[in-house]
Figure (tube, rainbow, N blue to C red):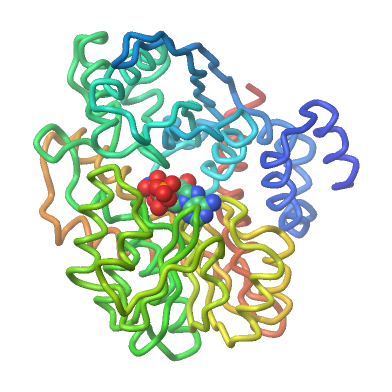
Length: 445
Ligand code: NDP
């Protein structure tokens, strides 16, 4: 396959969709061997078909704020690929949301979901609505208006959205309430639900826990573990929170967390009641990072900087896309980082990934490392179908096992001649093969 020609043609069709084009290129670059070994994929137009979503819904979301003003946001759902199961992927509410970002996330989701070994296709959605600083009433009215448009397109066997940036338990509750009213049924149409109405134990912490389990497997390949390691985490959202808890439990010390304005450096480690304190701040809709340094005087707030300048053994970017640049990667390598595990989706730029791989650093891409979130959503769907609830230990042990299998699949498909595991290639190849073979079986459709 001529990658440059393929990408040029795609760019002509979707000009300016930078994040989407970046994600497609990153996957296709690693599939060269697979495509050569499987010429039938080219004949069946698998690549041409897999890079285009099955369909995209775009709609307006009008809502009234507490002052009686009418606001209009844009809503989207990208149903990307359902070859191996119903569309599955989160909803993101953030002012930066646009179609390119949702298409990049939906595309990545296809391979991530395939890696989990569970029957889930890929999708993603969201809105440019910003829940930050909004009252519960405003968020509820927005969610109800959003669902008024979305509900006919989703269903427990069709498309099962979940949370993502800006969509947590509160938003899922309002979205579910609206769906239930409109569809007149109580089904597992969303995941991340409350524990009393169909949710799964361990779902809130699953992405961070899963990321840490995956990184632990990476460290094992070097005969080491988290015990005694210094760890830099970015963000302090859902993913970063779970990662901070599990890293601490496994004996690592979390030195940093961050927000858009800067990062916290706490040389004593961010653990226990400090994590609880951050959760309180988060729940109260306040600025999260800065107050931490007032509450815990040993900690320092570094304004306008990213945490990657702090010397660490393991780096876990858990905030957002393209938040770790080439220069950050160079500093991390210079400071002796041995493992970089992406809790967020595509947080490292392609140039940063290149630096890690050239220096033979253990580098785990988001689609493998953070797959624990959607995997546990898959476990929530299974519990909903069976109409029962597993205890926390059962969910956690299944999650742990899934993360180990994803790691094994990456090693199997990504080990290079010199023994270096290219986790990016491993994850892409393993995720792609299952979906491509399913598409072959199902004909051109
Ligand atoms: P949250 O909204 O809960 O948290 C995001 C965090 O990142 C917040 O602390 C936010 O700070 C911070 N942040 C946002 N922008 C920046 C920036 N430019 N620099 C530094 N920090 C920033 O989202 P999630 O934790 O759910 O998601 C984080 C990432 O993980 C995303 O890439 C998401 O797609 C991915 N992911 C999430 C899954 C999940 O289960 N939730 C599953 C798989 C992947 P502030 O709140 O102050 O804006």
